[in-house]
Image (tube, rainbow, N blue to C red):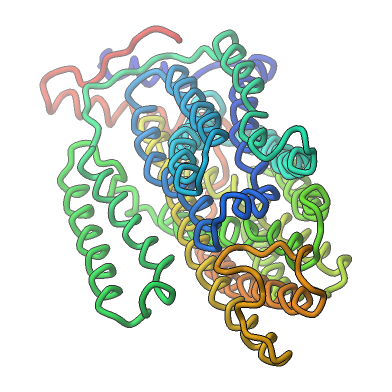
Length: 539
């Protein structure tokens, strides 16, 4: 019994509010670096892709590559968090992320940039998964809403600051877009120092193995699916032998991954978690939220710069309503949930606002009044702020300390997966729609489509003749509206999923989960006839 209870006590960390804030400071700073380094590129990306002579497909894959790497590695980081030092892991993730950022700044082609963004995604996967796991380790479920609000606030500040800083950097001649990748390095070094001094968690090590086969098969299945979505309709028809081979291959790899996960002693994505209705529905909602959050919003910078002719700096300012909505919702709702212990009503409200915001943004065109777009973006921001962190919170409230890493990373995994699929699918839709609208508009002027000046690359509207510029702006504006409209059904799917989640009031402490964990570990140890856990000291 002693061997079973030791790790459980180590998992329950008794800390004051001040101690928790001190411990979270480095972690939140690390998250800020990850978010800043990601969002600082958003408004700079049209300029970056133009200078590197890339097209819409390259634009999409610069974003998708990071999301795919984040998706593939999040479960691995989450599993490692259940096995070894969380502090070392988060420092390692931060180091990998910074290395990827510096190398991205040295890129000479879109191919190199995409490869470096993959490395960034590996580090981002660790920061995304470990932030949730470490918070869950230190903070009881009832109090977690309050601190999740802090996390949401940091995410919002990073999301606000990133596009603005990126726009200023790109618009400053003596800096250039490469500094978008270097700007986060000083913050990252500071985060490493602060983490070393303030984050002290018990180290719990178990005798277990990483499910590398499962991780490899899952990554391969997702990658093949995304490649198909990106290339179909451009390099080959949607209904073609290439599509049939790639879809069949993705399904086969997915089936093999499921088989491996069912047989693995320590599966990367434990199938047993999906026997819990809350986890299953939260995963469905997370996929839908990820599709909308990444898939649609990532193209806003492109819309403002191409359809409205704004500078990168101004593009960042024009997205503020969405970010402020996220900031307000995540902080205010987090505190309310802490005070009441009730969370489902906010998931339902947030999903409804998300659906409405996407549907309304579907009416967007190049000449839509900005005040109207600001209202629509604010609705999307409020919806995201109410759903993102609280879906993780709902899942964490249903599992014991032993499975916090796996359960938290499962939600993050599927949200990133939804985002990667969304960016690929909606990016492909945008490319096809813009091509059609350009051909239609130029035909009305009696001009061949090649006169748009894009040549398969993103156009610089400021260099185009006035009549052609008007057609290009209208085409990209109409295409942007179409992808938001395509994202709206995913918001509805999220709404339906959270409606059927059964609300369980948040626990004020980890007592119930810990008791269950003690009993479970005791049973395992007795059945195995040998210790299954070794507990180390603190970081």
